[in-house]
Length: 529
Image 1 (cartoon, rainbow, N blue to C red):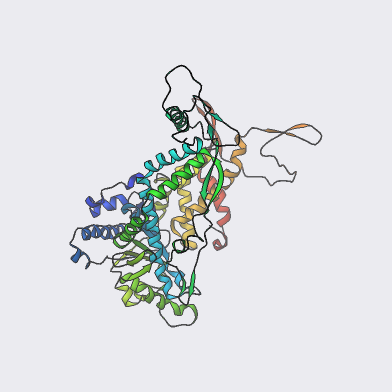
Image 2: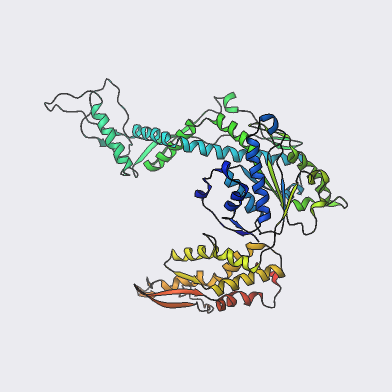
């Protein structure tokens, strides 16, 4: 019984090296309730990774990851368990639909693309981490560059600047007029300019210069790209044409006017890119993929069919044999170098309604030694999904309407009724698990989302062609066409300390009115529900 529980980034700051499998399961409980067997399996796999990293290199190379295969219907938490595990460990994570390799035009080499995509994800992760480390330095450097645009430094031989700066319209340069003798001792060259510069710095930090327009040189990002088409498909070219032909593909720039606030953001990004060592980023990303990468192979049951027919089914076993070397460990060539898949954790998942895990080829079965079965959701699970999470569906809907000053409440009986409808529709049609709640809830709130703003909106005035000022209510038809009567909303008035407030209360009767009329005595497969 899996329940998706959204979490926040603050939950990820954990000392993973000190966490036992039981503590890892407790962390996963914040996002997925139930499915203890699956969470135990991934917790053990994660703990074994930590144990392996503490061994000698010779012994560590011999220990292979214990890949996992999850069996269960859609919408019960398979993907969420894997995704939350990756976030918990800050590991590169990639979800791949195994069935896509059976599509028309499939070639075996395309399987290696999952490793290349995983490396790209790791590159982005490491680059963001490095940019956060140099963010303070980048902001200071960008601030200085911005001040140079506003107040260009004068040569050392130039006379000292005057006390006040002026700004000419149409120019981003602040002019300093010549100083006049005051009888005091003359200042050293540049001192007055420095004081003006610091005043500008203070004004910038206070936001007083955000609306001023400056002109700066920006890089022309319209660079040509190249691909090589071979009999194996589209390959990446590991050739740096900008280094080979600097005159043709040099860093071209162009003038662009923008506000100071926008220019600062652009300069910060440029400085971050300059301060980050991309060679180091690439090396660390490859190491992270090889040591802690996670690949989630969804819909693996779609390729579990045996040979025995004609047409598209013939490729299924071929896809398995192409995936096999990636799972068991091989070396894939990427534009960042060779990447070993020996220690990448592969988590496969599938409903296995028609086929079964034993239909996979024996070699592939042996590479997934851990098998766990996830249970279907019950009515009680649906109730918990709607109410327990910090960002549950009910809380999300309530918050959306509160942005317009509307108060929405759900009774316990209404939530139970929606859970019953979701369970019943899953039983009579395709079982899509917790995803059914989204469509049920949207159906219940359809009229409320459409009509409720009109109840609290004041009438507006409109001037007609004859010059007559008319009062038009929000609910009135502006086209003059006849409108179908809308069902009344469950609005009650409640006395509060601030006076009387209108509250929309969703009860079981309203739920049945919105949903039961559609599914009653009808072919449920005709509807989105």
